[in-house]
Structure formats: C-alpha cells, structure tokens
Image (cartoon, rainbow over all chains, first blue to last red; front, side, top):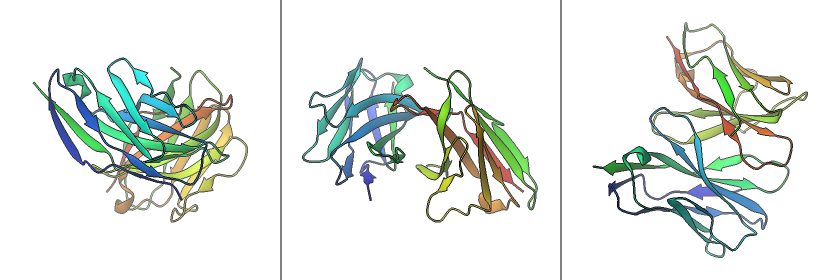
Length: 115
Length: 116
C-alpha cells in the first residue's frame, strides 16, 4: 500500500523568506501523480501544485516549486517570498495512475508566516 | 477551476438521528466523488469512493451501513450519517473528479457535523 509521510508537523517562516516543506512517499508503482494541497483556516482545500511522476522536470507555479526526487521517493515544496496569506496547513498527496485514482494524504505541515 | 458545492456547511443533530450531506459539482460532470473525514488538526481520511450509478467502495474500517453514500447523478452525491452518535462529530469533505482523465480533484467547502 502507498504511504505518504510529512515529518514536519509545524514550520514557521518570516514574511518574504523562503521555506521548504518535506514529503516522502512509498510506492511500488511507476505511474503516479503527486500533489501539494493547501488548507487555510477556512478549511477549503486548494491545489497548490502537481507533478507527474513520468516528468523529470520539477513543476513550478509562481512562488511555489517542487523538488521531485523519484529514486529517493521525495517530493518537497518550496515557497519563495512567503506571504501572510500562505499561512495554512499543507498536505502532500499521492495518486496512483491506475484504476483506483484516490488521493492518499500525508499528515500535514502547519505553516505559519510571521510578519 | 471547477466548483464543488457542499451543503450544509454546519449541522448540529441529536444523537440517534440521521443527517444528510450533499455534494454537487456545479459546472462539470463528476463521474467519481470521494468522501473524507477530518478530525481536528489531522489529515483527511478517505471514507469511500463513489461512481455514478454504482455502489460506493468503502475504505477498510468504514461502516457502510452507518455512512450511506448515494451517487445517483453525475452532479450529486450524498452522504447520510445514520443513527449519529457524538463520536461521529467531525469535519466531512467531499471531492469530485470529472471523467475526462483530469487528475485534479475539486473539493467542497466541507461540513462540520456536531452530534449532541
């Protein structure tokens, strides 16, 4: 079974600084997708960024980028120029490329951006 | 992006009663919908996967007779918590995916259920 591990329960960063959130996963599959979701205090889940396992190039979305290390099964999220609105719970998630297509979430990292 | 509407956002019910939560895809056809449960400061735990027109697939440990899921149309799935007890109090979230191979799942706003 696939598992997703986030080893940092809480992180703090100063506004305008850069922070990296860690995520590792375990799978025997070769075709899969990885995601980072943000859950602000409103509790609405928001997709931050996604990565297809077959792509070697790391995904980037404005201030958000990932470091995808397939062999190490690592998928970290880097947030540049942190903003107060980035304060949220961040979940790493895995989705098989097979028929099940369900999202498996990590335990989350609570990020606090300090003014 | 696509919109998923979940209703109600909050509900309080008495122990022993049933409560229904609706999840609607507003601008796309959701062939697959997912129901999650989230305890405070914890992750989302998948309860079940439902495909339109067929029975839901429940995750291990989830009581299918207690958490009834219906996905009768391509835009609506419902979760009914039957004979609710205080331990069923939680935050329930639905998500939906269209049938066009899109990997992104769109989430509802969630429902906070309190059983008193």
